[in-house]
Image 1 (cartoon, rainbow, N blue to C red):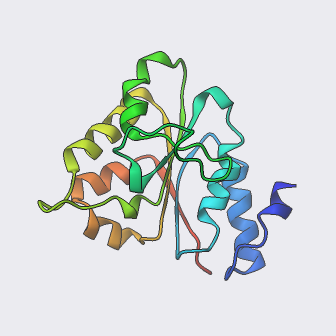
Image 2 (cartoon, rainbow, N blue to C red):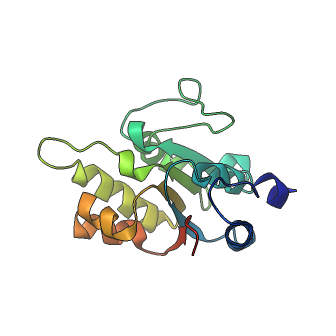
Length: 170
């Protein structure tokens, strides 16, 4: 059922769509970076992956609002409750077990005049690693552009332990 639902990513061949679905949905215990152009189905697949985790241990974050302390009620992207990274870290001690975290559109994190809000993102990525949480990420950037946008140190943290899934026809 999920394969049929997700087998219509625009611009991808049936072979590539099937390979992506099989790879990601058959291994929800892994962390992924879903990369590719806009409107190719990355967030759609992330939402399906999100549904495979227990409700009490799954959280989504919007990169555009990742620092704000927002609630599910104030930002709901169609059955995709969004919370801020700050809120998740503050509440971190209240949760038992591994959490499945989803950061949509990491490339949309806003840069500051000094270049970036690097200390906050570094602290977040370190906390995710320390807790052993799964962090799944979507981005329209390729690896090279990801390292151009973020520092080398942050780029390595983003990639660490995650499987890169390319939403292009290869």
